[in-house]
Image (cartoon, rainbow, N blue to C red; front, side, top):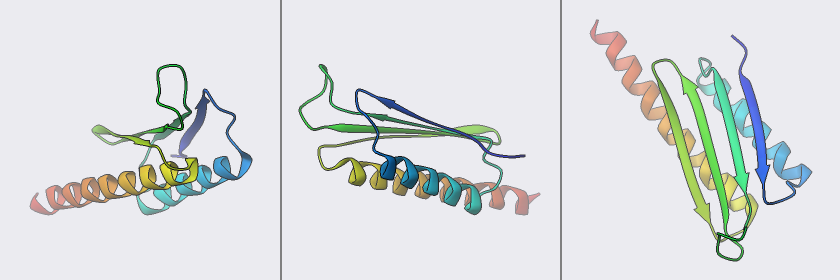
Length: 107
């Protein structure tokens, strides 16, 4: 089943190179664990309710039997916020994959 992905930007104009990096990271996740059904990445810039310079990256991955969600905030650059959020998603997806494999092996 092909991966459905969506990139949403709120309170900022998402630079093309950042959007490309996000799309590369989505493909990398799909390459690692090919049963991801859907990936939605929301990048939010500083707005009236945020501190100056703070970026928020939300990643939601639909996988069999659950949804993996990462919420990451950073007052560093947008690129760092995206990198750190995807690193967290990588770790959660690897943990989920190990647990799923262990459950299948126990059967």
